[in-house]
Length: 192
Ligand code: SF4
Image 1: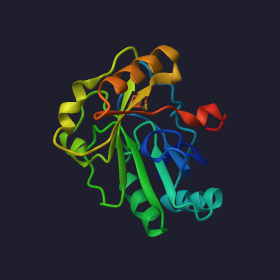
Image 2 (image 1 turned 120 degrees about the vertical axis):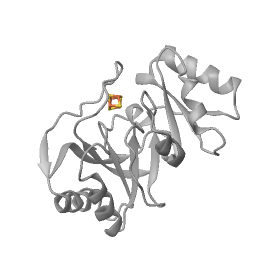
Image 3 (image 1 turned 135 degrees about the vertical axis):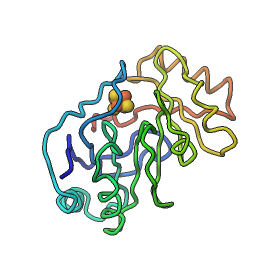
Image 4 (image 1 turned 45 degrees about the vertical axis):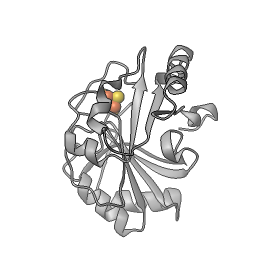
């Protein structure tokens, strides 16, 4: 069984796919304990892989994009089964991961890596986009793991706080070929 925190239909508010409608599947639990974490990823319910696929259909109809997030969505033993079942159901699966757990992913799976600690080199090498959380500083020490790859790097101000926004904006303007700004746009319109 999968351990879940919540499922909902919304839009992707952050990063490369900003503005794209998506069903979100928030898996419970995380293997890290970041000081700035504001996500409630506590266990709310259990569901089988088939139940999750059916619920995605109920929530989003034919919506092609499904985001597996957390917590850490790759921390559960059935994560790979869920990814395969969603792909078999015609979904484009996106994963928002801290990049610490090496998992083989099909080429059509979009992987967002947000490095905080213990980044696995294989996951850095597989990332389709990088999301650096800016909280008082730009943690650019992680970028060496992505060197040599044409992967977009987004600076995302923690909590959309003005000081973090100013820091991220300044860093992006100072290195425009390296960074893009990512804001949590879903919060502007009051959707989850
Ligand atoms: S990796 Fe993400 S979900 Fe896990 S504790 Fe850190 S910020 Fe929270």
